[in-house]
Length: 453
Image 1: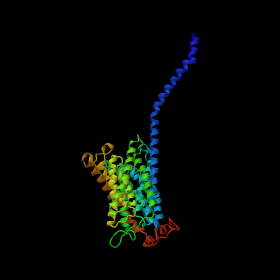
Image 2: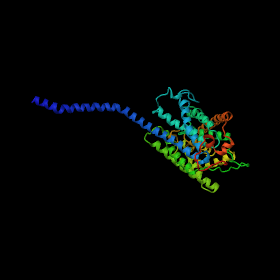
Image 3: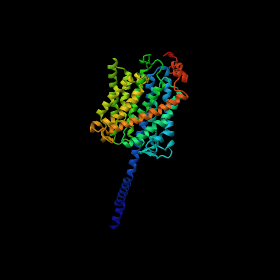
Image 4: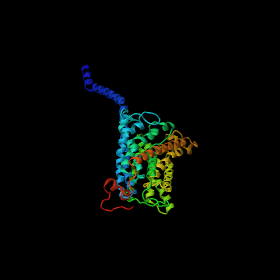
């Protein structure tokens, strides 16, 4: 009988007990390993999200190219596309060699002092691999550089543009970025700019203002009394395609700035605010220009949508959706009146880069101090929630500081280029078109020849 019980134990209960022991120990091991596995999966998901957003922001280069090409004359289409193409190349190099270290390297309140060519930096940034984070930031840097191409279109020398593009990407943009995103003096004050109304758009818009003011207007833009003449862009369909591409890419620009997926709540808020501001910006600009000039101008409506996108870029994570509607609508109005204001001062901005990016970048930055909520991550509640102007004052100080720094630095850069290799092409080359004069080709060879306008 005893032998029989031992036999039953060996054949039945023993394997069951051993299996249960193995299962329990394996479960304990799995529980011990679960933390690192979950952490690894979370980092992988966040990395993919940031890279997809970086790819969307890169695709915005095509949008900028189409908008700028459509809003200028056919004889300069190849030239503006070449500038859009090459300035991202120059921005990538400048930001890799020098810019990233100035912007995110350890240093002082004004600039970073290490990280040239990414050397000596930690392998991750906020849980994201360094290389993925660099690509996302490099795409932003390229966007800031590209903004200037539109403001200085149709009369700037190509070599001068390449020099400018490298300097703003390697030096000017990163310093402002360090103040705000790199742990610099403005970030310590509580200044907020979630996705770049100041860092990207104000920098690009003010640089465009300085460049176009120094270049002077295009031939035939203003008559003897200073009244502006219409130098119509050659392809509204191209410009429309560009605006849709930019609108699409902006979801990566703003929502990607979360740098993490989380539970998706913040991404959803940012994306919705982005879309609402663009919509009201387009409508407000169309209504404004319709009332002013009697026609619902499509080009101005499209710039209104872009103005709304620029204005919501800084506050997109800090405001409620109803505030995004207001911010976008105000931006749409500002961009129309901004174009008129530039014409009063005879500042010739062919695509509206200064009103869209410069003026509405400032507007978006200040709107944080009015509509922002401390519960969404700000240091202080905005004016309408608290009656306290502290956050608004901080935003105004930061915006003013960025404007002055970019105006002085880029003004000096453009003046230096102008006195050395020259900024502007000759009058004959401008009338003939930069496609032929600068590149020896035409965007639409065999269709039309433009020599007098």
